[in-house]
Image 1: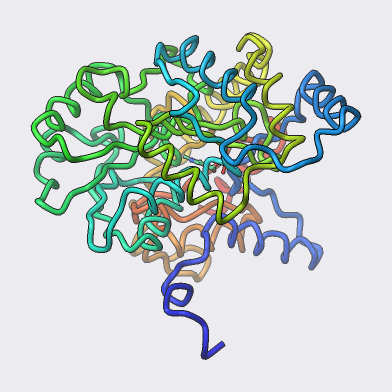
Image 2 (image 1 turned 180 degrees about the vertical axis):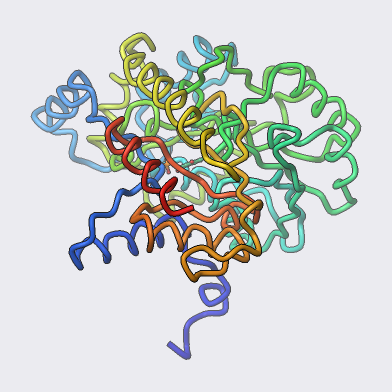
Length: 393
Ligand code: PLP
């Protein structure tokens, strides 16, 4: 391992996957662990999508696909962008990849040169900073807290911009905070960006449909933003298709072309069967998946109510995704059952060891005062998990 590249040595292991592995280990030792660490819907894939995949196998969709995705799939994505986001993306602006994670990775390698700065409003999704670093970019974190619902203000954005700023990356609805940027808030950010025409925006909209307030807004639709926004989306969350690994972008043509060129040397394109199934998924009306969104909404309310009864848990009201991100800094410096809690990582570990509940430290998301709790679990598990947490704090 001495000969491991610096690139890999300097990379952090995904904290969410690490926590899931640790939980699995304890489970194997016979402990009854409730896992609330993963960003994965606990639903099955809807049957109509499974049927489409079975049909694709029987129809022999077994060859390499076009590198940027089947034409029929890009057509379905184009219609979806128009239908849900009022965005016009033609086939030359769309690239299908092996999960939105690869879409993000492609974009970083295509747009960034070494030393380019990327503004990340924190808390941000755990992989952004490592993807940016792999592309030799420099993540610049902008700290936000519960007082602004974990959203970056225009003044904060303005203050973070330097001559080296090349991009800003954010998700709305946000993983981990569940925050949703309103149209007015995005317009505020766009007003700042219009003064800096060379800065590109990655708008990660993978939780678009899991929005309880209604009214998802894409920043690409705001004045002056279309030609410099990469809209990232995928089917992992809304369609419960995490393992099928399909994500996509709508972007300026030169960026899409760059991503296709890169992908042609890396994966040759995404999985054929999954692509065929996603055509069916995206052509279906959103009403077909509403039952999952309604269930997440119910659980969010339950979790907020139950966690709200625990002293020291300070919560925003997340309007989307399926996470809560309580600020638990009130526990710092305290000793619980002989364990001193100095930071969020100590607290998450304490919950794992004493309550048998797996969560993730906010440090992995660029916020050391919080932990992330996923409520993509059954009501029964959520009630039990929160009762256990309450009992040990
Ligand atoms: N973006 C955000 C904000 C996510 O939470 C995730 C998954 O956790 C992804 C992207 C990656 O999704 P995919 O499964 O499509 O790679």
